[in-house]
Length: 216
Image 1 (cartoon, rainbow, N blue to C red):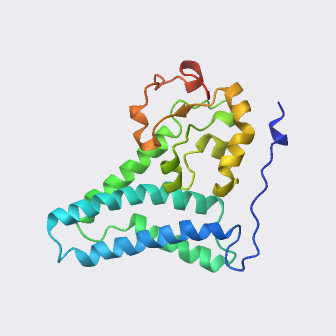
Image 2: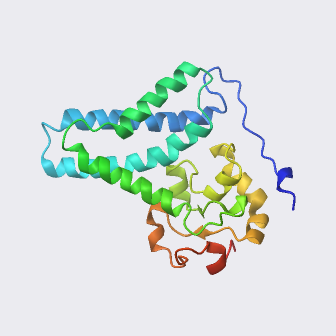
């Protein structure tokens, strides 16, 4: 099959603010909420009991994972704004929310958040087939996971066509599902950071299509 013929229309909008679609207001607000949450932890630390801060810190580490792999990942491939200045400013807020560690309290949760992100990245590719562009990634189709991560679970699809906008990912998946089945694209049941729980993990050194069923 000639994969070059597969196309997905990019979203367009009349918005003077957003470059692709007004739906990008959602990941924008999610990224800004993460920044506010981060700053809130900084100001709350001297006043809240440690057990509260530990819970909030763990939530922060989950947010680092979701931000890097959801908001940030989509922003890199399809910058949200028409204005280059706004894109640069939003990128700065992302860096602050995910990468700054100002006091000792943040260090373990900062580390844990990036551990979650590394797990996410590892299982998005573990068992993929490096010889087939359509199978370079591993996908996970859980609804809640993809809502929270702005459809980053559709990772085989993303690698196949990196410029497909997150709002178009479900439709793109339907378009290439049969081709994915033919080529043995690997799919896991869990969110990628929980990929180690998957029942059909291939052995190291083997791609998923050699050891597991493809898309059913």
